Image (cartoon, rainbow, N blue to C red; front, side, top):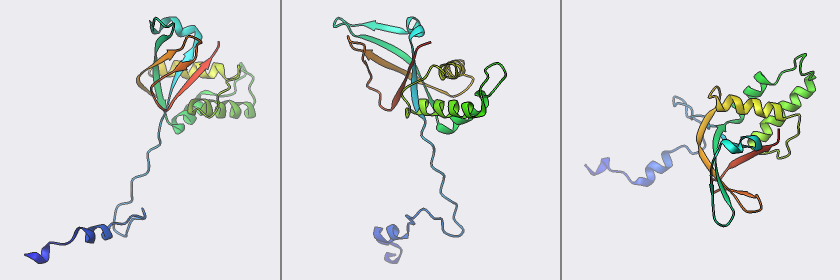
Length: 163
């Protein structure tokens, strides 16, 4: 009976840690793309949000949050940012607006130009109407007395713009 009991080390050396499947084995699952979590901090919407004021002058505001992968954002931008006779965008401008939107949602771009605002609002409308994307749990943001936003949540992008 002892011949069927083997050392644990024997099993460790049998594992293939390179990620290349052996002939006859199923290939490894592809890595999932990590979604970017973000909130819209639009000044015109601030009255509609849940707020709590503290004695030290700080204000707690609860914002709805959303999550999108870069692939989802690129797909939405390709379908919704198009050149029409009404908006007068050229092909190079359309590509620039698409790239800017993907960079804004992912947090790589922090300065939002006025030309990007209509497309950000269009994305926000699609997300808030549940037509696209995934709604995450609400995020609590505390604004200090001087107006600086802070949150306990990690990896969240604040998209703040003025209409």
